[in-house]
Image 1 (tube, rainbow, N blue to C red):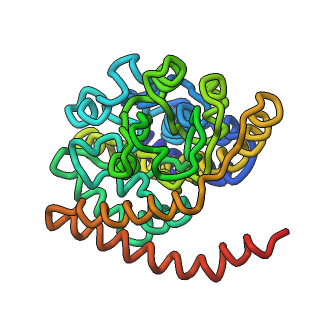
Image 2: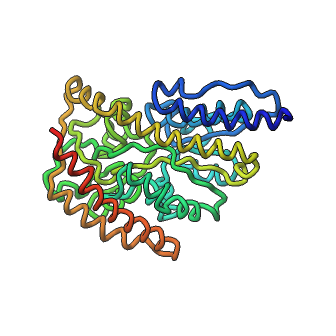
Length: 367
């Protein structure tokens, strides 16, 4: 067997070994090292919407790069840059599309101003949770629609992480009714931001790196980021008193790997498969990471830092859901948009019915 073919087979075998290792243990040890590649290395640049090595999100991007590098047997080298190192966080989409970088890591709702339907592939208010998003994308036709949406721009999306249900956010005043939201400037992206606007608030889109300072200085009145694990790392408890739940606006936020189509198609077939497999592995790993660490971080926020945990009033949630349902019907403008909306809503309804008799029933029965 020629050396190039042998290494290709070895890379594919390493992918299987890496996947097996990813079922447990420290993710730093998740990939089995393979023979060092002595040929020409394909170098990719990954840009992200997160601060470099930031807990959870930034680490997820690093893990994806590590998987690709090691599963390829050294034939690929992906170097990760945090937000602002090469391009600002909110310019990742254009930079990958132009070919300035081969791959990006972020969340598709950041691109709502360019493509109105992109938030459907990240988070929809009162929409799908993490389990349901994975079901829709990977086995319900969602990923095919996502790819069709990005194809004209020369981009290939892949699900690459999920935060699970997020928190509603940080506030410096109590929320007792919908009137308390009026005029409130809040960092909140995507479709959640549109619901906030229609409820009388003022949504502000900004990258995570600006959230703490903006909240602390009063440039914004409230902010949602992710959940306890990330929010503790950002020190948001120093800038706001009340921590509200549940994350109605982001019930299961899918993160994306944004891949330049030309760069991807230039890869040998086995390396294309390794990139895809690495994204799917990182997708599962990040959700597991948040599940493992969120409650410990929440207890630290409450017991060490004196954060006041509050549940949003049921009436407020009901009114926000009504606004959301009306808003969603207005998002679909093109024929593709309408197919995305139809697919999402139909999947939600069937998943909701199943989870009513499975997940919900179990949660309610567990003491």
